[in-house]
Image (cartoon, rainbow, N blue to C red; front, side):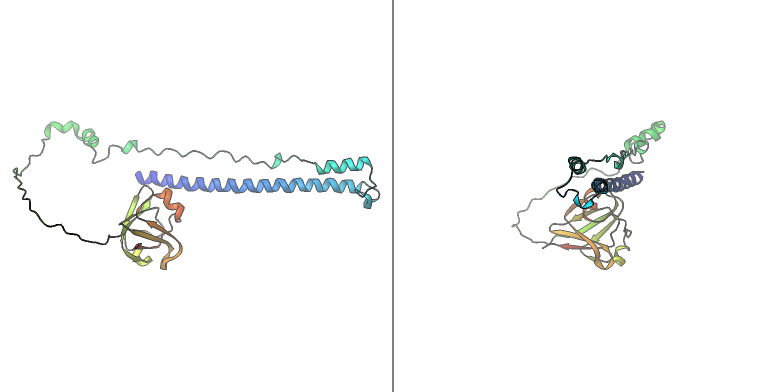
Length: 246
C-alpha cells in the first residue's frame, strides 16, 4: 500500500510538471499570435486606404486630403480585438490523498496485537527469562593514547521510489557498469532516490551503460525524489561510480 501511494505521488508530480510546461509554452505562443494578428489587421487597413485612392502613388506623399490622413492615423493606432485567441486552460486538479488509515495497525505494531488477539489475552503469559542475572566486572586499565588514520569507506544506496521506498541496492566503492548494476537488487531505468555514505565520498550516476549519457554527481548525503529528479533524469539510471573526492 505504501508503494502504491508513493507511485501515485510520483505519477502526479510528473503529470503536473508536464501540464505546467504545456501551459507556459502555449501562453507564449498566444502572445506571439496576438502580435501577428494586430500587424495583419494594420496592413489590411493601410492597403484599403491605398486602394481607395485614385492615384495610388500619392497616398501619404504630401498631396493627401485630411480624410486620407485621418484614415492613415486610424490604421496606425488600430488595436483589434484579440480576445478570440485567449485560451482557458482551466485549473489542474489537486493531488488526491492516498490514505494509509486502513493498514495503520499492521503486523508488528502494538495496536495490531491488541485488535487481533485481545480476546485471547487471558490465555497468554509474559515470557519468563531463562538467564540468571550476571554481575559484570569492569577493569579499568591505563593505556597510552594511540592515533590511527583510516580512510573512509564509501558506498551508495539506490532506491526504486521516492521516500526511499521500493527495492534498495547497495554499491561499494568502485565502477559499476550495466552488467554489474543489474546483478544487484537494482532494476535498469528504475531509480528515484539515493543515499551516499562516507566522508569525502560521492556517487556519479550515468543515464546509459558504459558510463555514457547524462550524468550527475551526488556527494555524501541523502537525496530523495524531490532533489534527485532535478539533477538526474528519473527512472533512467543504468551505471554508476562510487569514489572518494580526495
